[in-house]
Length: 154
DNA sequence: GCCAACGTTGGC
DNA sequence: GCCAACGTTGGC
Image 1 (cartoon, rainbow, N blue to C red):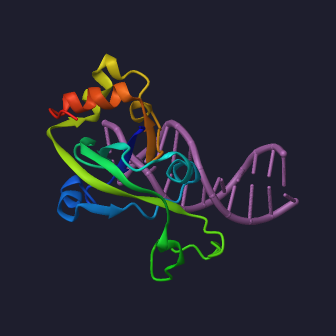
Image 2: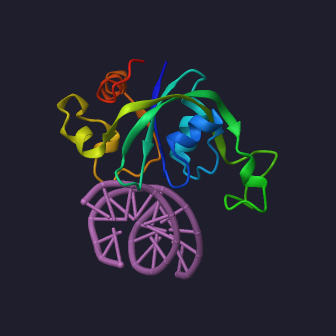
Image 3: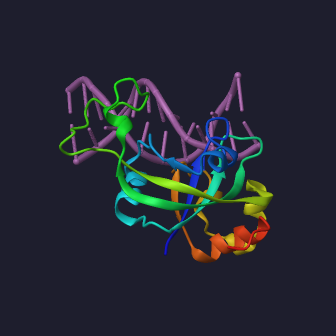
């Protein structure tokens, strides 16, 4: 079992939105590193910290899990989509995504400053300066520590 | 709104 | 293949 942190701007799609719809296709990711994680390393059942980025405040809002991994991203072939990629070949799709399922919203929102203050989270990717990757691998210990901070037992 | 960090593009 | 220019992310 692997652990991930996935970023979403809450103005666009928040943990509450995920709770409402239960499952969501994580399409529109146009970064090769993030794609490779979804294509090669994610497995159904993997656990996810749902991170609110570009938010007031930014931080971890809850827990989700992977429902399906390595799904061909349909938006790359949709001419009306803002994620349309004319250079992607349907015979060999360039962009791969995954589907996530709602698990739990944190009792206590865990803001970025609190993540940075917690010595047990040293080395966690999201607290490093300039870390823009929207899908990040996570240590089990870090996942569990953040859940504890959020008041949730997983 | 600013700007640092970093990914991508394209000229050469 | 290098690297400058440009675009985007995301914290503040």
